[in-house]
Length: 195
Picture 1: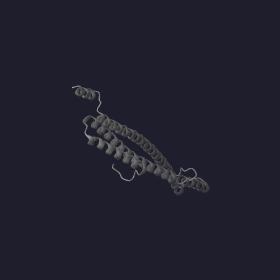
Picture 2: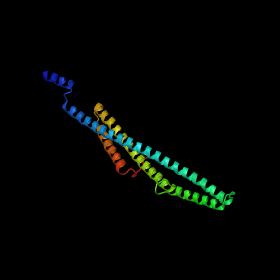
Picture 3: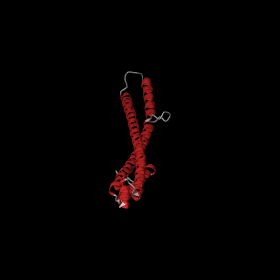
Picture 4: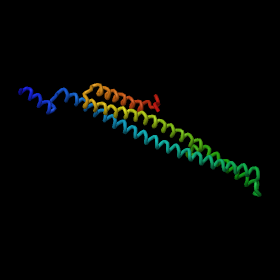
């Protein structure tokens, strides 16, 4: 009778060594998954911020490109009008003005010294778009990895309640899949696209 009582007290005080050891392993799994979840979320937020910044930069550069195009078109139209219908001004003054406008239009088209010509602006805008697309590809992989970690945490937590070992293995497998998604996002974001 004393032995049975002792076992009952042991059970009430949580003295099941096998259950405790199993729960410690699950707790460790959940901790590791939470650690990688935090890492994945940090990487995702950083990639998202980079994508937004690059998108704003590309938009600004394309707006400047369009402004240069409009100004150049206005000058070109004025030049053509002046050449076709010169006013009462001296022909030498008209010729000088046309040359000045021609130089300005050429500078607006390509200005390597300042990088503010249309050609240079288009190249910078395209580079910003490439950076944006890379950041977005990384962001999607990081988010998928984070989702895998979250589901893994839920499954591992459910194993503690239900005692179904398969849930812990599934949670661990999702953790491995999450790490793989983080690695793809970090090292090969264009390897495959899910979205």
